[in-house]
Image (cartoon, rainbow, N blue to C red; front, top):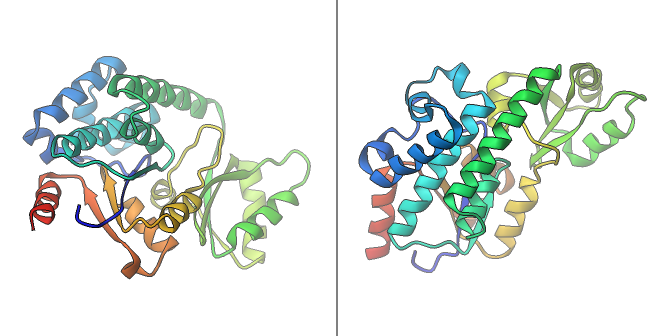
Length: 270
């Protein structure tokens, strides 16, 4: 793509919405085949949920994880068919599996089988634990770590996502999260519990924190000048702006429909 150093970045939970992938599915047999395989492996009508929802069902981890991943993989296949390859790949939480496929580590089927198993395990775990997540703003990683180190014995909130300098997501049982909320406010931060905001920050992780700020920072230092957000939504575009407010340093394009692919073809031929 010209002289750009390109990174493909893949969204995960929080990017799903009813109607996602409608044009891609109707326009490209490749995307339909990948969804068919995902449905066979999961035993769920993933495309119908992706198209029509309801939103409550589409936010279940055992549904949304394979659905979002199937759409990501479909976009990868279309980019490859058009002759594109990235210099770098990265995935936000669930999106890491799509990145592994884009890097040639996992096949389409292996990726879907892992994601289906992951989604089911997380759905089962969520049903057993009275916990959740809160997004912390304007406190910074050092301030958050300091508060976590001061938790009383038996309180176990922890960092789940480090998305940007001003956005860190904590997870834990609700007792621990409620206890730390008041401390956050005392220290000048803001604890966000709004469901939409937390989904936009990627709601669930398995066991490890998501160090998205470090990933993006590393790509920018390596000279990446064009980011392609490969999959539904524009969550990662927003996080890019938080991590690097100077938008003159890079370009970002969402690859989520036929018009985006046509734009890329036009760029290459110019």
